[in-house]
Length: 159
Image 1 (cartoon, one colour):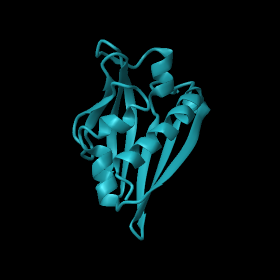
Image 2 (tube, helix red, strand yellow; image 1 turned 135 degrees about the horizontal axis):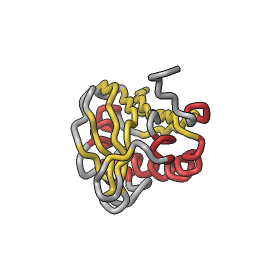
Image 3 (spheres, one colour; image 1 turned 120 degrees about the horizontal axis):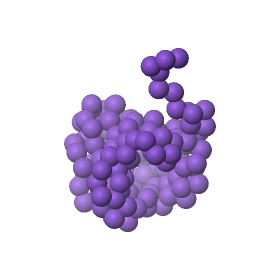
Image 4 (cartoon, helix red, strand yellow; image 1 turned 90 degrees about the horizontal axis):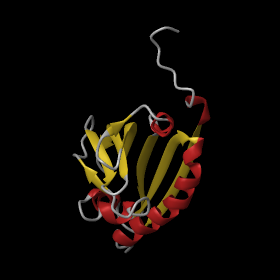
């Protein structure tokens, strides 16, 4: 229909799920995952120089960038401390810091969502990660998430 922006990539969205159990309470795991200095350590599984720019607040627009490679811009749709985060990606960031929404890769990426849920039972926290993304990103996530989960576990001091 006229005036409606329909991406030809939406029909190729795939739901990916990952999880990890950590021997620490969810408040500790949450803080470790988001804390400056530690956040960069677990996300380096995706890109060595990755960092977060912004505030972990519901409704905030944030950037996940590696200055050498670029990154992504997202809206934090849900930030429920110690329970969950949901982010929706709205642009890619080029290696020179500009927002990109029009090339093929950006059109496949925009609309990707990532959701983190934290469940605690008897002092152990399970984080479930759900990614809804274009099928072209599946191999990257399947290669990177196991490393990211291991990093999270190590940084949380698995006690």
